[in-house]
Image (cartoon, rainbow, N blue to C red; front, side, top):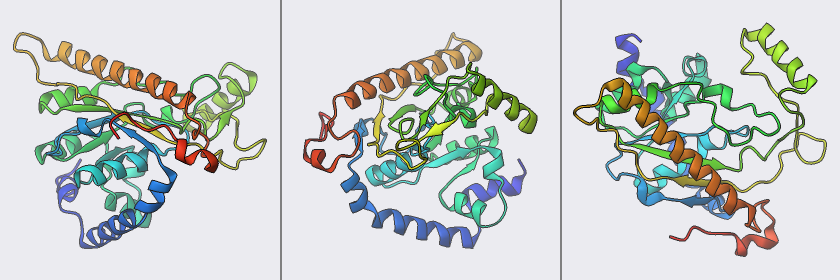
Length: 286
């Protein structure tokens, strides 16, 4: 990453700053609508008030996590979250790239993460990347990190606390019709490999309401887990400590996902039935 691009992380162009103010105005204005939708949000007390933390989350097919998590954090501590995005999106030219920058997104490279940490910025990363978004039948709410540990290594370098954040609901807006080993799944992998050279981005056959692609109404459930300490013990190697931090983060995130799935299964408002709005399950701390 060039020096110019690193500088732009903390000092964006004037038109990006104008767009940022517009985005924040819109976010503030939709607060009543979000409250009406009533997402389940737990663990806000686990967010360090100084903003110095790395959020590590799970991707879903619907992508609600990319918008809801930064929104909730900003509303709670008044600070903008900086998502680390795939280079294909972070380097997009024109209005689309400008909008991402206005929302705080930066290319998920080690240099940009280190720059944000040097300035004590709240950061959001999804280690599974784009391959964690398409879910075949039976793969909902599973992590596909494939050995990725860069987030743990950089967090440990800066003793940056990691806050695992789980989201449930996004993998139920659309339902995958087939499993990955079904002939349709294998066909999708073959097409994906021919188009992109990768099979892990294969798209499953999906349906929404009935046989249509109309999104199924689903409540979103978010939990911020207790921060994972990344301060390396004196006698432990950096490599072993990186693996330990990664594993601790993954286990915490998987535990939160399992707990949210249990909460969701007993929630009468899970499918946003207006008649059940007043009986919606709430966090114990609310």
